Image (spheres, rainbow, N blue to C red):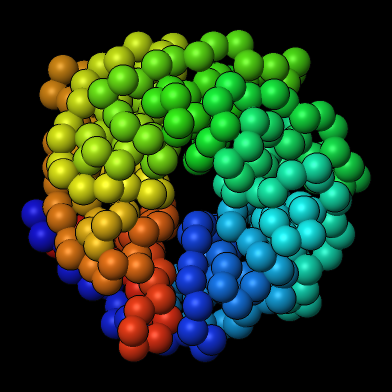
Length: 304
Protein backbone atom coordinates (compact mmCIF):
# COMPACT_ATOMS: atom_id res chain seq x y z
CA UNK A 1 0.00 0.00 0.00
CA UNK A 2 1.66 3.28 -1.04
CA UNK A 3 2.25 6.21 1.28
CA UNK A 4 1.18 9.52 -0.29
CA UNK A 5 1.28 13.17 0.80
CA UNK A 6 -1.69 14.40 2.81
CA UNK A 7 -0.47 17.99 2.35
CA UNK A 8 2.34 19.61 0.38
CA UNK A 9 5.55 20.18 2.36
CA UNK A 10 5.38 23.39 4.39
CA UNK A 11 8.53 25.50 4.79
CA UNK A 12 9.67 26.36 8.30
CA UNK A 13 11.64 29.53 9.03
CA UNK A 14 15.21 29.13 10.34
CA UNK A 15 17.32 26.34 8.87
CA UNK A 16 18.48 23.86 11.49
CA UNK A 17 17.90 20.33 12.75
CA UNK A 18 14.81 18.69 14.24
CA UNK A 19 14.23 16.01 16.84
CA UNK A 20 11.01 14.44 18.20
CA UNK A 21 7.50 15.10 16.86
CA UNK A 22 4.18 14.92 18.75
CA UNK A 23 0.51 15.43 17.84
CA UNK A 24 -2.33 16.78 19.98
CA UNK A 25 -5.19 15.17 18.04
CA UNK A 26 -7.82 16.77 20.29
CA UNK A 27 -6.66 20.37 19.79
CA UNK A 28 -5.47 19.76 16.20
CA UNK A 29 -1.87 20.75 16.77
CA UNK A 30 1.42 19.23 15.65
CA UNK A 31 4.59 19.95 17.63
CA UNK A 32 8.21 19.37 16.70
CA UNK A 33 11.43 20.03 18.58
CA UNK A 34 13.27 22.44 16.28
CA UNK A 35 16.48 21.72 18.14
CA UNK A 36 18.90 23.71 16.02
CA UNK A 37 16.87 26.92 16.36
CA UNK A 38 15.97 26.35 20.01
CA UNK A 39 12.24 26.57 19.33
CA UNK A 40 9.13 24.43 19.58
CA UNK A 41 7.43 24.34 16.18
CA UNK A 42 3.61 24.60 16.27
CA UNK A 43 1.57 23.49 13.23
CA UNK A 44 -2.16 23.35 12.45
CA UNK A 45 -2.99 19.65 11.99
CA UNK A 46 -5.98 20.40 9.73
CA UNK A 47 -4.27 22.76 7.29
CA UNK A 48 -0.55 21.93 7.78
CA UNK A 49 0.14 25.66 8.12
CA UNK A 50 2.83 26.76 10.55
CA UNK A 51 1.27 28.65 13.48
CA UNK A 52 4.54 29.74 15.02
CA UNK A 53 7.67 28.84 16.93
CA UNK A 54 8.13 29.21 20.69
CA UNK A 55 11.59 30.01 22.08
CA UNK A 56 12.51 27.18 24.43
CA UNK A 57 16.21 26.35 24.14
CA UNK A 58 18.08 23.21 23.11
CA UNK A 59 15.04 20.90 23.20
CA UNK A 60 14.63 17.28 22.08
CA UNK A 61 11.52 15.61 23.53
CA UNK A 62 7.85 16.54 23.07
CA UNK A 63 5.21 15.39 25.60
CA UNK A 64 1.65 16.70 25.47
CA UNK A 65 -0.68 17.23 28.44
CA UNK A 66 -4.16 16.11 27.26
CA UNK A 67 -5.88 18.17 29.95
CA UNK A 68 -4.57 21.62 29.07
CA UNK A 69 -2.65 21.17 25.82
CA UNK A 70 0.67 22.24 27.33
CA UNK A 71 3.85 20.70 25.97
CA UNK A 72 6.62 19.44 28.26
CA UNK A 73 10.14 19.42 26.93
CA UNK A 74 13.68 19.92 28.14
CA UNK A 75 16.47 22.37 27.51
CA UNK A 76 19.66 20.30 27.48
CA UNK A 77 21.91 23.35 27.38
CA UNK A 78 20.86 24.67 30.78
CA UNK A 79 19.47 21.31 32.01
CA UNK A 80 15.87 22.05 32.82
CA UNK A 81 12.42 20.61 32.08
CA UNK A 82 10.02 23.25 30.77
CA UNK A 83 6.24 23.68 30.75
CA UNK A 84 5.35 25.35 27.43
CA UNK A 85 1.97 27.10 27.18
CA UNK A 86 0.86 26.50 23.59
CA UNK A 87 -2.39 28.45 23.86
CA UNK A 88 -2.68 32.03 22.66
CA UNK A 89 0.19 32.95 24.99
CA UNK A 90 2.65 30.75 23.05
CA UNK A 91 5.35 31.07 25.69
CA UNK A 92 7.72 28.91 27.70
CA UNK A 93 6.48 28.88 31.29
CA UNK A 94 7.69 27.35 34.54
CA UNK A 95 10.80 25.18 34.53
CA UNK A 96 12.67 22.90 36.91
CA UNK A 97 16.42 22.21 36.92
CA UNK A 98 17.61 18.60 36.59
CA UNK A 99 21.13 17.20 37.06
CA UNK A 100 21.69 15.96 33.51
CA UNK A 101 21.23 16.45 29.78
CA UNK A 102 17.76 15.62 28.41
CA UNK A 103 16.43 13.59 25.50
CA UNK A 104 12.95 12.00 25.20
CA UNK A 105 9.98 13.00 27.36
CA UNK A 106 6.61 11.43 28.13
CA UNK A 107 3.66 12.57 30.24
CA UNK A 108 1.22 10.69 32.46
CA UNK A 109 -1.92 12.76 33.23
CA UNK A 110 -3.10 10.34 35.91
CA UNK A 111 -0.09 10.94 38.17
CA UNK A 112 0.79 14.35 36.68
CA UNK A 113 4.27 13.03 36.01
CA UNK A 114 6.65 14.30 33.36
CA UNK A 115 9.25 11.65 32.53
CA UNK A 116 12.47 12.91 30.93
CA UNK A 117 15.36 10.55 30.24
CA UNK A 118 19.01 11.52 30.44
CA UNK A 119 20.73 11.84 27.07
CA UNK A 120 23.53 9.23 26.91
CA UNK A 121 23.10 8.87 30.66
CA UNK A 122 21.89 6.52 33.36
CA UNK A 123 18.83 8.24 34.81
CA UNK A 124 15.16 9.03 34.29
CA UNK A 125 13.96 12.28 35.85
CA UNK A 126 10.40 12.44 37.20
CA UNK A 127 8.77 15.87 37.59
CA UNK A 128 5.35 16.77 39.04
CA UNK A 129 3.65 18.98 36.43
CA UNK A 130 1.47 20.67 39.07
CA UNK A 131 4.38 21.98 41.12
CA UNK A 132 7.19 21.70 38.55
CA UNK A 133 9.33 20.00 41.17
CA UNK A 134 11.69 17.06 40.70
CA UNK A 135 9.94 14.11 42.39
CA UNK A 136 12.55 11.41 41.90
CA UNK A 137 15.55 10.37 39.87
CA UNK A 138 15.24 6.75 38.71
CA UNK A 139 18.55 4.90 38.12
CA UNK A 140 18.64 3.08 34.77
CA UNK A 141 20.96 0.35 33.49
CA UNK A 142 23.43 1.06 30.69
CA UNK A 143 24.25 4.57 29.55
CA UNK A 144 21.97 5.26 26.57
CA UNK A 145 18.24 5.54 27.31
CA UNK A 146 16.27 6.34 24.18
CA UNK A 147 12.52 6.62 23.65
CA UNK A 148 9.90 5.75 26.29
CA UNK A 149 6.12 5.15 26.39
CA UNK A 150 3.39 4.71 29.00
CA UNK A 151 0.80 1.93 29.13
CA UNK A 152 -2.57 3.72 29.41
CA UNK A 153 -4.02 1.01 31.67
CA UNK A 154 -1.28 0.06 34.16
CA UNK A 155 0.56 3.39 33.78
CA UNK A 156 3.85 1.47 33.71
CA UNK A 157 6.67 3.19 31.86
CA UNK A 158 8.58 1.34 29.14
CA UNK A 159 12.06 2.74 28.50
CA UNK A 160 14.51 1.69 25.77
CA UNK A 161 18.16 1.15 26.73
CA UNK A 162 19.95 1.32 23.39
CA UNK A 163 23.51 0.34 24.27
CA UNK A 164 22.36 -2.88 26.00
CA UNK A 165 19.68 -3.83 23.42
CA UNK A 166 16.95 -4.02 26.05
CA UNK A 167 14.03 -2.13 27.55
CA UNK A 168 13.07 -1.74 31.17
CA UNK A 169 9.69 -1.48 32.86
CA UNK A 170 9.25 1.15 35.59
CA UNK A 171 6.52 1.02 38.21
CA UNK A 172 4.58 4.33 38.36
CA UNK A 173 4.00 4.10 42.14
CA UNK A 174 7.43 3.14 43.45
CA UNK A 175 9.23 4.75 40.49
CA UNK A 176 11.70 1.88 40.32
CA UNK A 177 12.76 -0.50 37.55
CA UNK A 178 10.77 -3.71 38.08
CA UNK A 179 11.72 -5.65 34.95
CA UNK A 180 14.44 -5.78 32.30
CA UNK A 181 13.64 -7.32 28.92
CA UNK A 182 16.47 -8.25 26.56
CA UNK A 183 15.90 -7.56 22.84
CA UNK A 184 18.92 -9.31 21.25
CA UNK A 185 17.37 -9.30 17.77
CA UNK A 186 17.35 -5.47 17.77
CA UNK A 187 20.66 -3.61 17.62
CA UNK A 188 20.79 -0.19 19.33
CA UNK A 189 17.05 -0.01 19.93
CA UNK A 190 15.87 3.59 19.44
CA UNK A 191 12.24 3.54 18.35
CA UNK A 192 9.68 2.47 20.97
CA UNK A 193 5.89 2.72 20.60
CA UNK A 194 2.98 1.19 22.48
CA UNK A 195 -0.52 0.13 21.43
CA UNK A 196 -2.50 -0.02 24.67
CA UNK A 197 -5.54 -1.57 22.98
CA UNK A 198 -3.62 -4.60 21.70
CA UNK A 199 -1.20 -4.58 24.64
CA UNK A 200 1.81 -4.56 22.33
CA UNK A 201 5.16 -2.76 22.49
CA UNK A 202 7.12 -2.11 19.30
CA UNK A 203 10.90 -1.86 19.36
CA UNK A 204 13.04 -0.89 16.34
CA UNK A 205 16.74 -0.24 16.02
CA UNK A 206 19.68 0.52 13.81
CA UNK A 207 19.76 -2.94 12.20
CA UNK A 208 16.37 -2.55 10.49
CA UNK A 209 14.28 -4.93 12.62
CA UNK A 210 10.92 -4.20 14.27
CA UNK A 211 10.06 -6.48 17.17
CA UNK A 212 6.73 -6.89 18.91
CA UNK A 213 6.55 -7.63 22.64
CA UNK A 214 3.67 -8.15 25.01
CA UNK A 215 3.37 -5.81 27.97
CA UNK A 216 4.68 -8.64 30.14
CA UNK A 217 7.92 -8.70 28.13
CA UNK A 218 7.12 -11.75 25.99
CA UNK A 219 8.67 -11.62 22.51
CA UNK A 220 5.85 -12.17 20.01
CA UNK A 221 7.36 -11.58 16.56
CA UNK A 222 9.95 -9.68 14.52
CA UNK A 223 9.83 -8.11 11.06
CA UNK A 224 13.01 -7.19 9.14
CA UNK A 225 12.69 -4.06 6.98
CA UNK A 226 16.27 -3.01 6.38
CA UNK A 227 16.94 0.53 7.50
CA UNK A 228 18.10 2.41 10.57
CA UNK A 229 15.37 3.79 12.86
CA UNK A 230 15.11 6.74 15.23
CA UNK A 231 11.50 7.47 16.31
CA UNK A 232 8.47 5.16 16.02
CA UNK A 233 4.83 6.06 16.65
CA UNK A 234 1.76 3.85 17.14
CA UNK A 235 -1.84 4.58 16.13
CA UNK A 236 -4.00 2.51 18.55
CA UNK A 237 -7.14 3.37 16.54
CA UNK A 238 -6.00 1.76 13.28
CA UNK A 239 -3.23 -0.40 14.82
CA UNK A 240 -0.56 1.02 12.56
CA UNK A 241 3.05 1.71 13.51
CA UNK A 242 5.24 4.22 11.68
CA UNK A 243 9.02 4.27 12.03
CA UNK A 244 11.34 6.89 10.52
CA UNK A 245 15.05 7.04 9.87
CA UNK A 246 17.79 6.74 7.27
CA UNK A 247 15.69 8.59 4.68
CA UNK A 248 12.64 6.35 4.86
CA UNK A 249 9.32 5.99 6.67
CA UNK A 250 8.02 2.43 7.05
CA UNK A 251 4.45 1.76 8.18
CA UNK A 252 3.47 -1.57 9.73
CA UNK A 253 0.02 -2.91 10.52
CA UNK A 254 -0.64 -5.05 13.56
CA UNK A 255 -3.58 -7.38 12.87
CA UNK A 256 -3.35 -8.84 16.38
CA UNK A 257 -3.66 -12.49 17.27
CA UNK A 258 -1.72 -14.98 15.17
CA UNK A 259 -1.71 -12.73 12.08
CA UNK A 260 1.05 -10.58 13.56
CA UNK A 261 2.67 -7.47 12.10
CA UNK A 262 3.28 -6.84 8.41
CA UNK A 263 4.68 -3.97 6.34
CA UNK A 264 1.81 -1.79 5.08
CA UNK A 265 3.79 0.82 3.17
CA UNK A 266 7.18 2.45 2.60
CA UNK A 267 8.19 5.95 1.57
CA UNK A 268 11.56 7.41 0.65
CA UNK A 269 12.02 10.78 2.37
CA UNK A 270 14.70 13.36 2.87
CA UNK A 271 17.66 11.97 4.83
CA UNK A 272 16.89 14.46 7.59
CA UNK A 273 13.41 13.01 8.29
CA UNK A 274 14.14 10.67 11.19
CA UNK A 275 11.17 11.33 13.48
CA UNK A 276 7.45 10.73 12.96
CA UNK A 277 4.16 10.92 14.90
CA UNK A 278 0.59 9.82 14.19
CA UNK A 279 -2.49 12.01 14.30
CA UNK A 280 -4.93 9.44 15.71
CA UNK A 281 -7.94 11.41 14.47
CA UNK A 282 -6.98 11.28 10.78
CA UNK A 283 -4.35 8.53 10.70
CA UNK A 284 -1.88 10.96 9.09
CA UNK A 285 1.82 10.63 9.81
CA UNK A 286 3.72 13.86 10.47
CA UNK A 287 7.43 14.29 9.96
CA UNK A 288 9.95 17.14 9.82
CA UNK A 289 13.36 17.56 8.26
CA UNK A 290 16.18 19.99 7.65
CA UNK A 291 17.57 19.59 4.14
CA UNK A 292 19.72 21.47 1.65
CA UNK A 293 16.68 23.46 0.49
CA UNK A 294 15.56 24.46 3.99
CA UNK A 295 13.41 23.09 6.83
CA UNK A 296 10.01 21.50 6.26
CA UNK A 297 7.04 19.84 7.95
CA UNK A 298 4.68 17.48 6.11
CA UNK A 299 1.96 14.91 6.70
CA UNK A 300 1.57 11.64 4.80
CA UNK A 301 -1.14 8.98 4.69
CA UNK A 302 -1.58 5.40 3.58
CA UNK A 303 -3.31 5.33 0.20
CA UNK A 304 -6.57 3.35 0.13
